[in-house]
Length: 393
Image 1 (tube, one colour):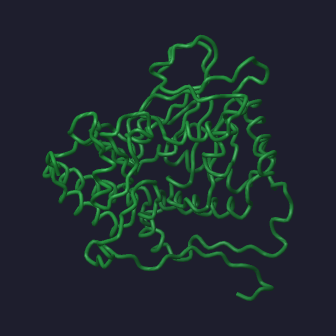
Image 2 (cartoon, helix red, strand yellow):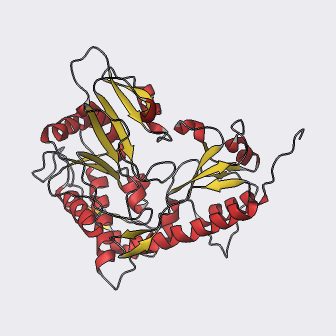
Image 3 (tube, helix red, strand yellow):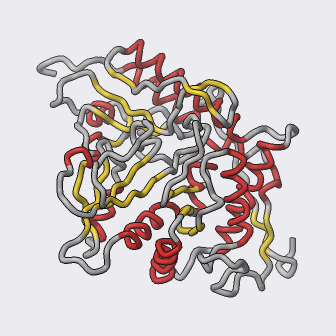
């Protein structure tokens, strides 16, 4: 396409190694510390030009979007596809919620904290989450050092009177467990982080319906590089304050990223409804089931570690009984509390994230299940080869 015709933006990926074609240098460190969702390349590489979109030179000049949303920079196409996706999957109630778009859920998390924090008070409002909690919560708040809110640690041990904000991550990051509020108080404000509430990871037992819910395209579709997330917010004033936070911090969200996200969500919805297409969530779930089965076999044979177990439940999306297959494995070393599982795995060139980062202890590590096939295969080989350290070695 010539420059005067427009700019064609294509999603494509080079062929990746498969379990039968594993040519990666096995001396390299396997990085499973963060949830980089490169596993999804195998699906999107088969889609072809279904995700192609064209931007002309005169597109996206204005700060303002073309819709009538309270979130004035939200593109109407993205708003339409977000609503469609939640209705197709059954993951959340959208009809009585405002949609606020952000640069993934990290920015939306800060916007929600800003919107829910009292403006005039003698001290910052306490923010808590039950251990093991998402490691970014304390890191972000300690970094920002806002005068409106402060990190107060484990929700299970929080006893302070007065108002507070509780993060409920469900399914939980790092252990994949479905969560409910923990603090028993009448002045709490709740933020539901539902980044992984999608059928490839979790059993959809009912559509989520909460005051503030955060989602991201990163873990839903695998397009972490597009940096798009959204919040579903019941209260108009809270949605307005969150929008104001976005306005002050970044003056909106990239229109190109929003329109690409809208196209990706459209393709996913079509794949769920068109029998001629390969269902994205069914394909992704099959990958997760395969990886979890293989990991459990290695852990059982190795007998040094323990994995979280999940109940068999009826999934409204799949219309059948399944168990969860989370995006992260919460691996527990069978040694004593002084054992350092992260250090042990690092000695075998497996880079993970220590349980201490999640308010837990060093026997635990979080391991991403979303890497490319060749990395996951090498990880299993190295995990299987680990033997219990002997005293004096």
